[in-house]
Image 1 (tube, helix red, strand yellow):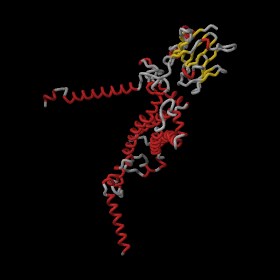
Image 2 (cartoon, chains in turn green, purple):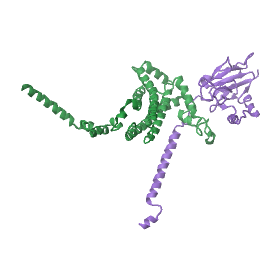
Image 3 (tube, chains in turn purple, red):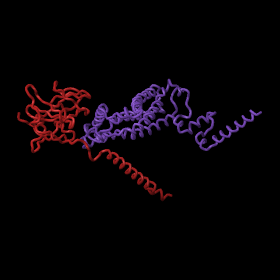
Image 4 (cartoon, chains in turn brown, blue):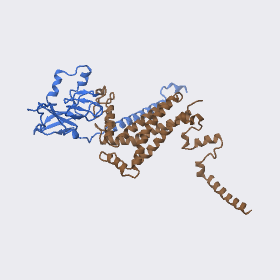
Length: 265
Length: 192
């Protein structure tokens, strides 16, 4: 009898705590649907959560098969998140200035606590992201997932590939070493061969385009890779391109949710 | 109702046109302004004109040598100063292919670009590799004290500018144009 009485008192206490927590407006606004014991509730959980609403409310078993999706899109997005996080941390130490950039990169490697692993995470995740984007593209191609009604999302995906490569390219200059410097010299010089708008391209004389007012000049902010080019690469790399890419990514995921996963019916 | 319909230009249409054209003007102006923003009005780049000292400071080629390529201005100004038996001229050390800095190999008497392997002779002409054009040549003028002023201008002057056109027409040089690299301002004759 004593035991029972004690237990019921403890039970009452737990019950009242559970009740206080679960009827709390804060709890209710986080867990809106209650225990997801029905299909409707499960779909409602997906729909009402900001984290989960990226995913479709309902996924077929085939859509979960790793053999089918390779999870390449998901890995790419995961790498993008790692890059954003490590990139923001790198920004605490790196200054895009001609005399400092290379030394800051060296300091990050040897003088900043955990700087070496931070920089290498950013570097390897960037390399890996280019690879996973391409593998994702291959998977979509080989499973025929680019076909109607998903053809427009394929186009958005190609744009995302472009932005991934542009992010890679702008990040290449930032260590301000010989490799990045000359790679970007070569890469931006290609822009000077643009028809009409590049100073070495066809028809450039029609618009009076020369080395100090062509499209390459707008990209590197000068006639040669220098201080302006470094700052421009930095701003595009850290702010401009990630924002644009995020916008396209949001669209990309939203479209997947609307179209559902491809695969065997 | 019939009277209202007889008017071709309704109030709604008027506001649509006014609103639409205002929006177009605004976004168009914003686009042009944004593009213009990326073209700064001043550059803090090395000067395109520099004093390279007196011609006597550059050693003339000796027995069995055709040219001496002087690299003292390469790092600072990206210009080689070349002394031949008859005079001095400059070459802009920018590969016309994609902008790398080639290296001078005195033993082989050629310039080689490390990026994509273009090879140039001391005249700046392409011997091998992907470069579509020879090196640019800077203009040389003499200061009152006799020292040489090199002007690379907007990346320098490419040997006759018409050359690209000529090359496409399979006529590489005109006889009178060929003169241009053997006389001032692109060549400074120096007595031996």
